[in-house]
Length: 357
Image 1: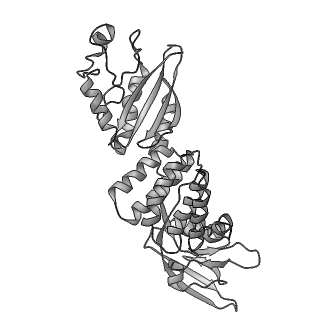
Image 2 (image 1 turned 135 degrees about the horizontal axis):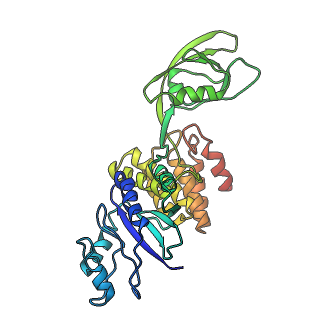
Image 3 (image 1 turned 180 degrees about the vertical axis):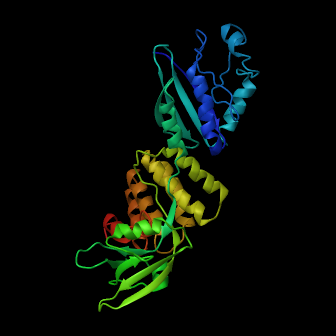
């Protein structure tokens, strides 16, 4: 089966859905290549085309494709411009079109600039639901920050409420004076029977809003505290089938480029490294982590220690065992660093074990 290919550059994320619709219009009536013509011919939308090919100066390819819709597809100058533009775009949306009319499916490939492995999605001509699902996945935003208390509780049938297992140093709960071993009985006047009740109350709020907490002490004495929520950065899940990781990488690159030198950019680099690991590209992950290591804050939670731990993993997978051990041992020195988010598991014991300490 022969296939042709249409590709569009994605220069702004807000245009990606429109780009998909425009490309879909092309998919509905795929144009076969002229006999003997290699390569592919693209269609114009939102900037330069990556589907342009240099055509011969004569023959059916020249006659049919040299001037289509007012665009000089085969001009060498256009091809050079395409290659230059590819260095600046956010990514590429590519469709592999069937060469046989009986075949009613195509494969969409979404590739972030700088990445080497695309996310793929099958679509069917004439079935809008198949590509609406793709658009829904494109529009989905990965959760990079969420409201945070720093209050770690554990479910127990021994108490009416949930005991406080740990309070993250420097967290909103710590600043409010919450103590380990207290029992959280209510949040905003509603009884708390399990940890999920607390998490639901936090997720319903935004950073800088307050939670009214009611506690019972060891002797049964009650006290009330207000906790002002903050944000905690979130790691991208390493393997989430609902995510288009190339789209996530495009979002993250915008943060790196839009907020250079900030913590936002540093956490985006950390997540770019995790996305690269998702695709098995540990060399790219290593590059991102080297920058994140120096840009992330040295404090409890997601921090420099987090980046050092993942740097050790990347070096280990790349075969640099000595350098990996050095990174693990450095990460073990960050006693309050965590994985996943500011409430996550501690880095130090994991890093010490992998580093041989």
